[in-house]
Image (cartoon, rainbow, N blue to C red):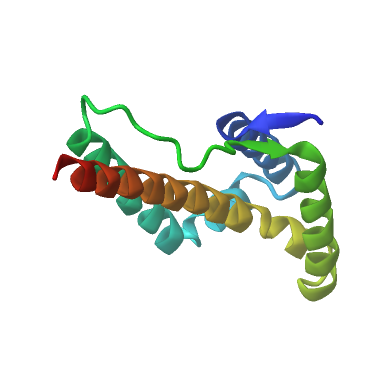
Length: 133
C-alpha cells in the first residue's frame, strides 16, 4: 500500500493548494482567504509551542511513540478528499466555494497533527513520572 509521511503530505498539499489558489482566485482573494482564518492560524501557532515545551521537559529521555502510525494511506486521503469535495461543491455553491475550503481543511489537519504530538509527549511525560517512583 502506498503511503506518505505526514510532513511530506502537508508540504506537497500546501504547494499544490497555493498554486491552484493563485491560478484560479488570484493573489488578492488568496491572501484574503488566508487572513480570514486568522483565529485558527493563531490557535495553531499557540499550540505549536506546547510540544516544544513538553519536548524540552523530556530532554535526555528515550521517548515512546504512542502514535506509531505516522504514515497515512494515499488511497484513504484521496477518498476523503473527494468525498468532502462533492459535499462542498453542493453546499458551498460551486467550484470557487469548494476550493475555498481547502485552506481550512489544511489548517485543521495541521491542528490535528499538533494535538496528536501533544498527546504523545504528555503520555511520555506521565509514563516517565510513573516510572520514577
